[in-house]
Length: 274
Length: 264
Image 1 (cartoon, rainbow over the protein chains, first blue to last red):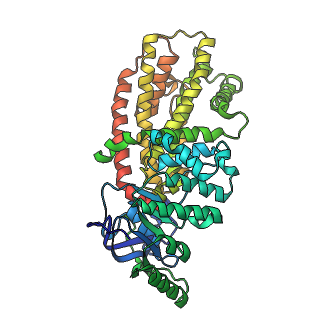
Image 2 (image 1 turned 180 degrees about the vertical axis):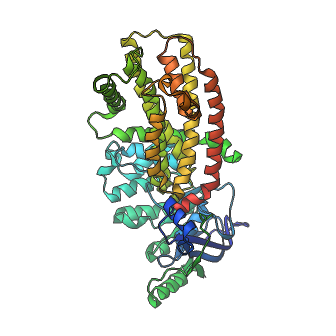
Image 3 (image 1 turned 120 degrees about the vertical axis):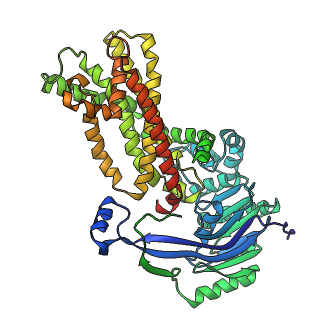
């Protein structure tokens, strides 16, 4: 393991994230009018604390796996790092000049009617690459995906595995400093999964920082050197890989799925603000 | 707000890519493809022409010839305007993946909608030019200089309204249906299929409050009527209003921005 640099690249300080789930039908004028007339119909919200008091530091070059059952707050955490949503309480600090690769989903913006080539340009543009940058990396993307023969085919003819291959190939050419990965290997065949793991190792070798959400102990073992276990939005373990995976296994065995603490009480009818 | 507004030109590459996606994807797989951009306004024109020339020929003023050309001057920009608003009201919802899964400048989406529809508008222009040539209309080159100005005013106004609508629809989904009906009413309240001179005097003040009135009249003055563009004072006031609408739309959009990723 390389020595971690002095200041962390990602720092969470007592971060909490609350979602307000509307109980009555989603925002409509009718509901507003009815709510104004009948106090009993006033919109109530279910409060969902997706994260509670989460604190950790991640240093450059670390590869951290976030594990936990469904609904434990893993994806929310990645979205906070990416800046897609803002924390309700606490502070999220991400080093300023880092290029963040957000792979919560592969192939964002793909349009079935467009060719693989068009979709690569589209997807890369959405991830913030300029046209010239894409021109530069396009051959590498096509090469990596192994789909060169299908470059002019519309992607609606692609299998879901090919779809994902293409998305992942774009993602790997974004050259991020911090990579946020959300269980994206799940679909590919064995050969492509092996290729992904190799790429991840090479990425780490270059000194890239990785935040990885996974349910799959094997890939965590192969790529990561630290595990953070989340349960009901709180950190229950932070440390070595083997102990972490054990802690997660115990957690899964002890209880079935239950979603993070839900409190119910009326909330103001105004739209929730982040 | 200003900070984000200043950053907007940085996304022009992204905007361009998304507009091209929209245009390419829209007619991909259909037999006539891009020709639909010509055919759609042409069919609409044929319908109105049939109604006013064959079904009720007495309704229109006799001296307004060729009536089809007159209507076309208004229908073409109106289609741009109304499709832009209608589509932008759902653009954030349909583009939810972009907003939820990557850090993405959401204002790009309504802007792309307006630009893609503007491209269709431009594609419809050759038909208009064809009509002008066919009827041998005298066109004043100096007057034609107003044309890009009118387009620009409409562009800014439409973007402003599109930003406003797209942001509000995230919280009030009903707006989309409401808008469909409102646009039908708005179409008939705008002097497009009838000249403003036919509107009763007591309605004039209300029609003058409608920004689309002045755009339609401006297009008609430049492309249809002979003589100088007499409506430019109204157009300039409208330009001011358009800029204010844009700023208001952007302001509202920016205020609601943080809620999009969770509400979409």
